[in-house]
Image 1 (cartoon, rainbow, N blue to C red):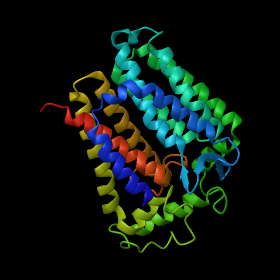
Image 2 (tube, rainbow, N blue to C red):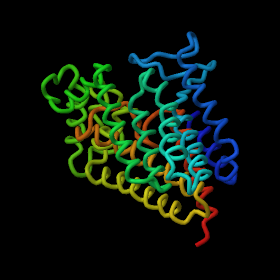
Image 3 (tube, one colour):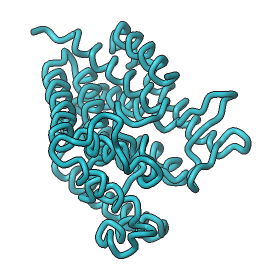
Length: 317
């Protein structure tokens, strides 16, 4: 409720603020959000859960700074690209700053570790770079760096390699590492066409891990079935189409890149979550946007939509 209440306030505030306002404060916001991701390593402030240090405790409130970083990253990258404009073809103003900004966002996330959030941020930034007019040779360089980076992460993070192994052979350890995906698939299959009905999920009671966060799509599938899942996915598709429509008609490059970034952030993260629950992508710790439990995620998602609608208000039809 706190996340929803705060999120609605943030949504309406962001909606009322002209989106160009964020251009001036994009760098300070990015630096502050980076500082927040580093604070999780401070004893008695940072909280460790399931081996990851991703949360801050501020009295009775628990925050996940990486959720703020996602939006701050989009705003700063949009500001940089829109300032560079025609100079983006230069390595000095295009590829190099993109790699530095993305790397700064990624280092604390990888250390936490929160590789899934870094994946979302990197893909969002890549989409924004494409929308800004990056060259083909830049794409190849980013792809090469991405392959090298992914290889290093898998090599030095055994649990990442374990996730990939579980993804490829989910039944090999059905009571261990493969337990979550096995229970997820059982929940999805139990929903059949129209589901068991709202609140009637069986798997969420002590069988399916993280039923209100990471695995909430499986619970949704069990309760609302194939039809409900198609409706949910369609809503994300409509959101993406409308957001890209706004991006294509934004009055300036800054607005277009903000819209692109928010659309990719929301849809990519959501589809990765759904794909993981269906075992067509390795399991991740990413929440399903607008649906999963999590105050920080909901608050920042609603704030992001408010910024997107602020861009939309400036579009002349």
